Image (cartoon, rainbow over all chains, first blue to last red; front, top):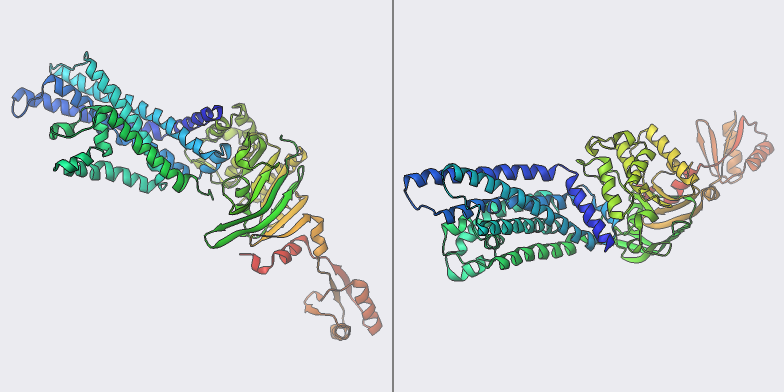
Length: 268
Length: 300
């Protein structure tokens, strides 16, 4: 148990001693703040003209704030995947396995340490979306709902989602040790493949029952609001805790498969 | 625990697909000595060392340290230190951070980081990112990692590879100082001359098989004895040697006679009335013996 704690400590230090984490965090914060702030400004301006559907205060705030996770989740996935694949790329598995020969222990420590980091990314992303969104809502004279407990529960669930996404990234990184391949998969899947699958699966009842288990759908179900539910209000969704379970399952299944296909193999 | 750890390979075999990299290899490395682990490139040295360290799983057989497999050592870095290649670093991390990570993982005091960096002469570069390091500095950082747990046993894979003369000189002196502290060192090389001055014992492999095991001096025993002889009357000398049944080659600097003794050759020349201008016994060098052992085809 003591050696497990040391392994988590070491995995944490691995992340903090390169520039990757704060560069990703910085880009994420700017991106989330820009999108959440920009949309608030558009809704504020359009709302005054009263054309098209006007969102109520109770709908607007959670939608805007959920951008922290609904568009920010790709950053913790990248962090998890890049930190893990860099161990293969830079051959640092050799000193890692020499210092801690129990390899399964290191993989679990990595999952734990990066889940914590994903949570930190979640906190930063929510500060960005809530900060930019609520500031502009106030400027337009709208209710930013900051006194609502439902909003803070949403923020908490979004942070949990970001933490789990980082673990999914670690799982992907062990499953696909090639760094370039892992980056391509993350970007192609999150930005292109999954949005199409989610849209297509919503077209029939039976496919919607499958589509709700897609990682992005599970994440949105966990958070409880996203621009997807706005564009398709009749969406079939999981309960929030089921969404968390599905995301966790993706992370664990990928990590276990990766343990057998790459992590446990000879280091030459 | 750290004192007197014997390294033991027992019938170790490793196959990569259809290629047998190491074949039924058995030998022990006694504590308190420097053992040279020699063989041409591709002989299976690195694979053998990685099996000892639990990085590669043997197809058959066992490799142990003091009777315990590396993966079962209670404190591996404090038992055996290993420097395997010069490229196991994240280029964006500083040397001190690199070492700090593994000190944390192994539960070693953080102060060890500064100590080992000073020991290998990198104290002034501790906070510089490894990306800017020369090959020699990377080799030193690899050694610093090996020394992190202050182990009594060191396993070094080709530590001299790719170094400039100054770096080679430094490593030789460093190995000698480590050995003077009574540490057990297993150092691999594809050139005997690189480690000749440092090692007490040699283990030689080629094509994954054990070829020779013994003291450095034992390599001399496998000398092929040659005599170098010359005469103003080379033709006459040649006739006399041929008549006596010796195989010889005529070179610019003299005639080389295989499997001969200088006294006998002198006697033959004297009996034939041939004046000699030079006569000496040639001992093949250790390097020649080494090459003869691993065979010409052994060098890939």
